[in-house]
Amino acid sequence: MNDTICAISTPLAPGAISIIRMSGSGAISIANKVFVGKDLEKVNDHTINYGHIYDGDELIDEVMVSVMREPNTYTREDVIEINAHGSIASAKRILELLLKNGCRLANPGEFTERAFINGRIDLVEAESVMDIIDSSNEKALSMAVNQLSGSTSNKIKEIRKMISDIETNIEVNIDFPEYDDINVLTNEIIKPKLINISDELHTLLNNSKDSKIIKDGIDTVIIGKPNVGKSSILNKLLEEDKAIVTDIPGTTRDIVEGVIDINGIRLNLIDTAGIRETDDLVESIGVKKSLELINKASLIIFVLNNNTEITDSEYEILSKIKDKNYIIIINKIDLDKNIDDSNLNNVIYMSTVNDIGIDDLKNKIINMYELDKLNTKDFNYLSSARSISLIEKAIDSIDKSIGAIEEGQPIDIVEVDISSASEYLGDILGINYKEDLFEQLFSNFCLGK
Image (cartoon, rainbow, N blue to C red; front, side, top):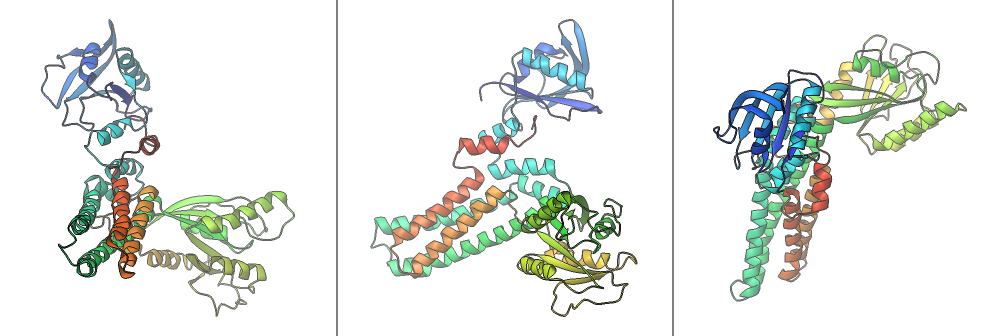
């Protein structure tokens, strides 16, 4: 943390500008060594200064240099940003100059890591920085910005404060047993507060599950036997001929993927090989992949033929998907009906030939996931699997403490689970320093951020 780091913060591709960023106590003095213009040591804080970058007598580029002094910077260290022309060669040359004059190349995410270590942001806010960069739709961006604003962190801190108040009550009772009647303390004071905390955590968890849909989309697999119209449905959803459509069974031998947007949420579509017994080696591998995707997908679209009876293998698939989110499409309703659909649920009737049913399918997905109700402005979300797992552990600990009270367990036993919940919430914020975790988390960031 005592050294000065640098990196190119813009994509390595031709563009209007390239930005080379430095952070650390030596940032201003190092920039001064290669910058010809005003003395950067003497310019006002948070100013942009025109000049040129030189390597000895050689002019490298015409630039604008931003000077930002600690602690009012992204990292709470001195920060320099050199805005050069958007040439890859120029950006690399300036970076090499900075390295030659005393900088160290930043690790991925190291600027954000320094912001976290220096106390400007917590771990939830740090994760939201990457979410902003990765945002693929407006709702995901809005959610990430909400996290970065500190709204979610403040909610977690509020819940930890509620837990801390309970722990204080318990400690007082343990140290001064005559202070409160133990039954009154647990049943009339602590238990209702724990139930309230559990409710708050459940709300946060449910909102966070919505956030996974907002952030990552809905992984959707289209399955069915050959020639039921899976590829045609994919093409209709994508509004392009991405998958090959023929009357020959086994045309789709491998998965075909595409992405559409429904109500601002990404639907990650996968068209699979038709599920059937086959002696064709390549097709059989595709069929195996199709069956594996049933277990991995968030949503399964199972396509059946309107003009044929349901086969034993199709009934087997219906059994496999009954406990998952699924939609059954009965396709080819333009043909004579031979299917018995009396016992089927979540059915959409479709004819891809006559453009019937695609809008019904989209509306079914919207209603199933309540996509029209997802609101990224008023909710607190946790977007990472790490954070969601810790919330689940905190809920489990609080519920155990409530159960211990109901069983009449000693108050110091009750406190163990209460303290565990507080620790899990602290892990979400990064209060409990774990170097391996932080290295892994920030290594997923891009260079220069």
